[in-house]
Image 1 (cartoon, rainbow, N blue to C red):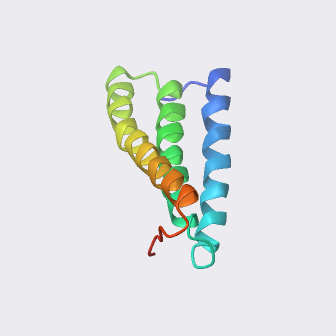
Image 2 (tube, rainbow, N blue to C red):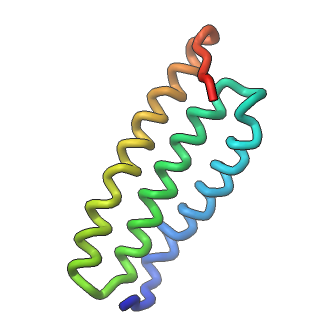
Length: 98
């Protein structure tokens, strides 16, 4: 069961903003080498913030625990994508294939 809390507005807004940025990166993936890395970062942030938002709204302890565990793939994807984004931006010869 879900119970509304004002704290959930922060991760929910982060989820929406990251999803919009991921859609924009998806459309520019052919023209900009860093777009794929940005897509990975934003997709990871969508998963991370989305599970955090739903977990903060849930009243069931089992659901909260499972969502806390489901947050880690998003965290890992965001970190790895950020490393790739930094490498792509700092090294002009680095290309990312879609």
